[in-house]
Image (tube, rainbow, N blue to C red; front, side, top):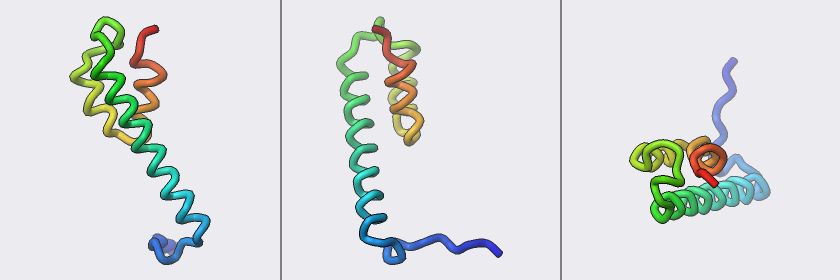
Length: 73
């Protein structure tokens, strides 16, 4: 038997807080990455900046990949 997905009302208050906090962190990190990408010279970015922009929308892999591999030091 397949287990049915939980709805928001099925979550405990603690679980709801964790989901909201994770969402806030995800939006903050993505915003930070987009801002960094815009301001960083192309010579300090691995790969085309035009490809990193849509890659950052792939959550949560895109922003993490950009922070780990996309920026040159």
